[in-house]
Length: 142
Image (cartoon, rainbow, N blue to C red):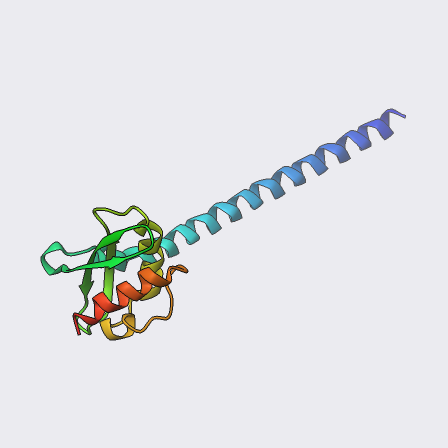
């Protein structure tokens, strides 16, 4: 009986050691995957520093349009790269707070388009009046 208990204890300890080793191996693999993923993200973000709006090259369009609530003063600041594509854009207003969502959506839609292409976008963020005004403002730069 003592031998049986001893064998069961040894078997139990051996299986615990194997499980512990598997957990340690799994943790090493996870750590390696996380490190590789962080490396890939850092590499893909290296070029983003160049996309920061260079204030010396900022173009500004001031444009006003009427929406049902009021006359809106729209300021469109943007940068173009060497090939004429929009690299950064910021759309704001000094008298209307409703452009924040439009600004966010415009960044997703018009960055990497030329001004001509941006002036032809169909719709930005479901805001048809603001999109129309944006397109007309951009057309003044063509």
